[in-house]
Image 1 (cartoon, rainbow, N blue to C red):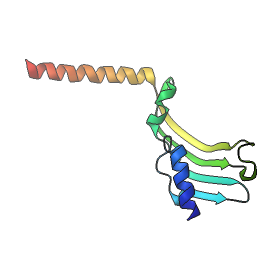
Image 2: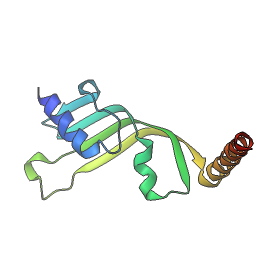
Image 3: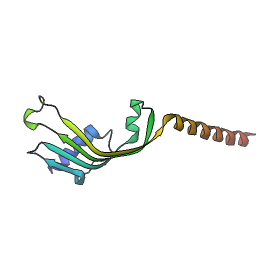
Image 4: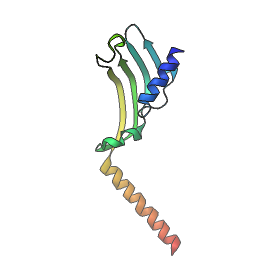
Length: 115
């Protein structure tokens, strides 16, 4: 039951960045003040606002650890640690070039249909 509540709270905070948090991905240690999420898949569009010089094609975090100081919540920081993460990316210039070629092909097809 506690895992369900925690997964809902985490989904509220992390839902913009990670795909569906499941209870079976969670390991909660109340006494050691740690929440551990394993094998988390990233929502790629969530990082577009950063305007990085590349676009993500895929991304996964093997281990996401959140250390919450329950006794000093509000005074001590909450620490988030990402381990074993991987991503595939494509250069934005390369992506823009591919999109431009695709648009040109689509425009050529459309103009052939019209004429």
